[in-house]
Each structure stands twice: as C-alpha cells, then as structure tokens.
Image 1 (tube, helix red, strand yellow):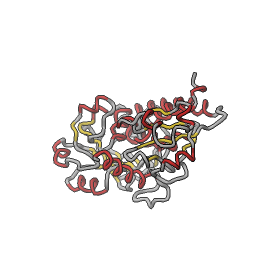
Image 2 (image 1 turned 90 degrees about the vertical axis):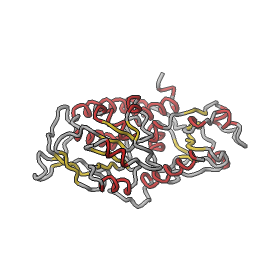
Image 3 (image 1 turned 135 degrees about the vertical axis):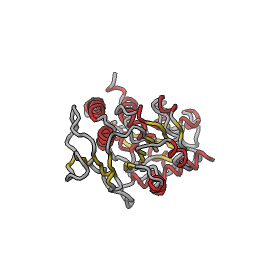
Image 4 (image 1 turned 180 degrees about the vertical axis):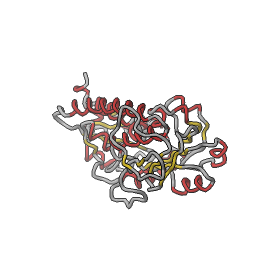
Length: 333
C-alpha cells in the first residue's frame, strides 16, 4: 500500500511537471543561466558550453522559479533534494561537495554514504538539513513550493530546477550546476561525452526500417489496470528517440490502461518498469487475454530499470541506449 501511495504521489507530481496541457506553476521552459562577474553588474546570458571556465565568482543565477540566487563563491556544502540533482552533482565532479541527499538518492554508490535528510514524498527533516550547514540546497520539480519556502524561511539558499523536457535541456541543467559549483570545465567535458553517446544512438536509429510498439508498465498493483507513461513524459520521449512507438503516446501524463486497451494495441514489447517490485514476464503473460499478444508470443517482455527513464538526470542517456538496444538489437550487433 505504501508503494502505491508513494507512486501515485510521484505520478501526480510528474503529471504536473510533464503534461503539456497542465498550467505550469513555474516558468514553462528551463531558464537559461544568468551570470556576471559581480551581482551589481548588468546580467549577461551564459555562452555556449566552453572547454575552459568562462565565469568567476561572485556571480548569480536565475532559477526556474524566476528567483535571483547569489553566490559569493562556489558552494562547498550542498544538500540535494532529488535523485536527479544528486546524479548531476556527481556527474559534473561536485560529488565531494555534497553533504546531504534525499532518501531516494541511491546513485552513484558514493551517494548512499551521505546524510539522509528524509523523503520528498513524506517529509524532509528541516532541522537535520540546517544542522548540515549547507551553503546551497538544490531542489527539483519533485519538491513542493512549500518545501522550498520552508527551507528559505530558516535562512538557507535554495536553487530550484524545473524538470527538463528533453535530453538537451538536461544538459543545460548540468551546465548550470557545473558553473555554480566551480566545475564548469568538468561539466562541459561530461556533456560532450553524453552528446557523443546520444549521437551514436541517433545515427543508428536513423537507419531503422520500422518502429516496434511498446507498452511501458510503471505499476501493476492493480494488474487489471496498470499504470503507464503517456504523452509529455521522459519515458515516451526515450522510447520514440530509441526508434519505438509508445502505445500510450496519445494519452496525457501517467494513465491507467485496461487489459482490453493493451490487447487492442497488441504491443510488440512489454517493458517492465515495475520489475523491481516483483513483476515478472511470467506473471504478465498469465494475465487474462494477454497470451496472444505479440510481446508474449515473441518472448519480448523485458524487465527494465525505471530509474534510467524516470529520473531527469544524466542516466537518461543510459536509458536511451538501453531502450534502443532493446527495440532494435539488429542495429547494435
């Protein structure tokens, strides 16, 4: 029951974040970093990613709530409130500056040793966060505005990221984190590496002659009506870029599909994003009416690490590669 409650809470948050029809509570696009050599100078837009540092402190950035966040120097004690932010911090070389992380930040392995400041879905431990004496708290769209305000009320500096809607927008978040933490060159190098990997996938997928259909399962607590990911989600974005077609791509957000709807769509692949919760290919194949599905008869029901598709951080690239190899193994021999 707890897993279902937490997932539904997450789904609601992600629907608000990703569904194009929803009225946004923050800026509709990822805000570009604004930085200067001193806070009193006129702001200049950040240039394209450079191989060498182009900014020096003090500087300020404008976050995705439209707030000016000042930095006299690169923060050395950072608390991350979301797994995506934690993974970005480590990817740009700022892992040693992180002193606390949310309960669900479990990657990379080094993150697990950091102080656990509580669950975004239940309650953050504000007193513990304050005791860590952070000079930056990095929030994401999974965090509520009330959580942001509560941390600011006790005098903490909070920078808020809106969820990116593309891999390219995720690079922008990495660039900003690299600049504000003093790792601009490291971030640029990491981003170029991710870009090269994505370009390799794009090049191979461009030669695909067909687009297999896929059903991505998020939660089958009610196996008669499992949750999936639809229009405006990272999962659909990755499936399509990996050369496939999500059978729920025309439905907004994170809908539940009936068994009959899945049967009617007859997907070529069933991708189990809920495999970590004990859902197996055998249990899926045994669902009423599913024995004749293409995915079942072709033995194409595949467990999948949902963290690679649902966390808007650097591992979206891992997710893209994994899905491309799953949907088009003939292109990656």
